[in-house]
Length: 406
Image (tube, helix red, strand yellow):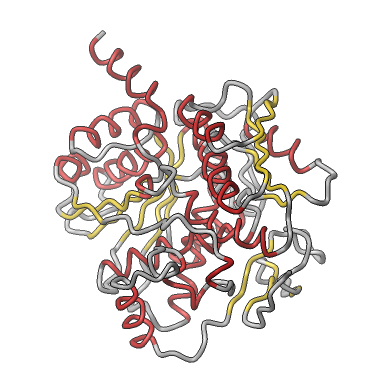
């Protein structure tokens, strides 16, 4: 049974289009222009100060929705009754001060928001709690995704909680062993695809079965959950925004989500100033970097993306337009770093007692580069997001140790 929600609707993410469709629209792209859809929710009449008070009070509550670092901010989410929400108490990850990492990055104040400390070890859980809840609400029987590993693990876990079948399209040999093991452990059906992530996503999107609900970041409800990482960050910082927010760039769903969060919080009067987004890609998988350099009007595809950071080994990111919009709204930056820079930054993260999978380490590598170039001042307040746990790719650790010792 589909529950009613008059607060939320879907609309085109392209500002010049303006097409709006009901929340229950079956599709992920605008029927008028073909751009990706986004959720628009009316947060209600509460003042900014009242919202801050309510969200802070919920931290001390044991109510199911309040123990989730996503649903705690439900005024800005599509409505779902509490007994129809599928949650693993995602979110609630700390803000860690960098020590050796701050020195390495060339900054006085560097903080890390480690989304790899979510239930399945990656940021994907923030989006999956909302998207799987929506799938169940719509009566879906099967949820599916293309993945390099993290999406697969997260989707499979939340699908298991909701009693849904999970089908995963993985590039053959393209997922780290621990991520594949997670997906299998949670009961996912695995379909190996020849090629890379982009090939896997194309095969998934060609699936004609109308009973399948897609859960890649083209799904606008995924973006809704992921945007709450910014809500929680600012809540932890007592609503004093940092100067820069740095994140890795792969399929660019997180970039879209973070930009959407900043736009919505600004419109609601919850931001005193706009933090600048910095998106960091691997040099061999740098479609957004190439696109922005070319003017941002058309996607510059990387046909054969290459990087040891498998989580962001993506050459045709679907949310690129939303990422460009986020960069423009925040006066943001995009850059790429080499695999050697990623390995070096990852090792420093480990020596600082934090750790991450390789894709996450792009943020520290990017901070170090921008600080050295004088783009980020040494006294700036910077928050770098880490999106995956160190144990997501243990081969990367073992191989880098071998490289260092050899």
